[in-house]
Amino acid sequence: MKKITIIGGSGTVGDILVEGLQHSYDILVLDKHIQNNTATNHYVDATHFDELHSTIPKDTDVIVNLLRIDTAHAIEPVEVFDQMTDVFFKATYYILLIAKEFRIPKVIFASSNHVTDYYEENGYSKLQREITTNDYPYPKGLYGVLKIASEQAGFVFSLHSDLSIINIRIGSVPSDNEKNALKQNDRLTRTLLSREDLVKLFSAAIEAKVKFGTYYGVSNNPDKPWDISNAIEELGYSPKKKT
Image (cartoon, rainbow, N blue to C red):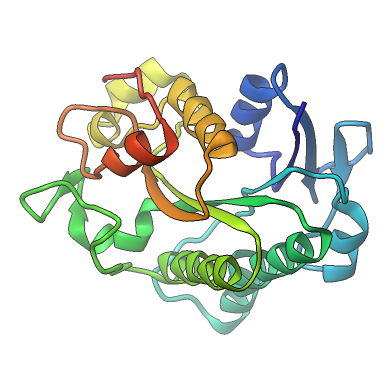
């Protein structure tokens, strides 16, 4: 059974992945919000390299990087910029360095659709076609800038090490009841990544024989703004959910 270490796994996406993957994989969640260490959950502040280095198991097969913090504005003051850089870029670099040192085969990075959100309005593509990973990334805010920077850091490591790097640009994953959320949010009918498809996509990424790749994470919704054809072809992603 493969050992999966999920860093930043105490949020909505992490909870869904743990529930969906725990019967197929040996899962360890690392997060700074964990108060009591157990066999499957352990405290770590990922912005501290030494903590990460001593906590990530050396026999991990796949690291899933779900690190996040809440942000409010496209342009942030210096203190918020520093916090965002620590979480969204520096910690990602630390994870990649440790994975390289420990010879962990794969890192899956939870990126965001916001790396290309200039092309999207209210869940519709403004390009008269679906947005692809070949479109030049134009983020509308600092959050997207740091996500694309982390994607590119992964590319560098994939070139200069044996690491397999998979970036997943996640669409919308509601924290509350999916059906209720869809009724209340029109954009979500196009941008939803359902719980079922979230698990399917990350399972596919865990098993895929891909050295480096970037993919949009969205269900097969009518009028979805992002193209998922490469995720289907290269990862074997098989989305079932249609809103």
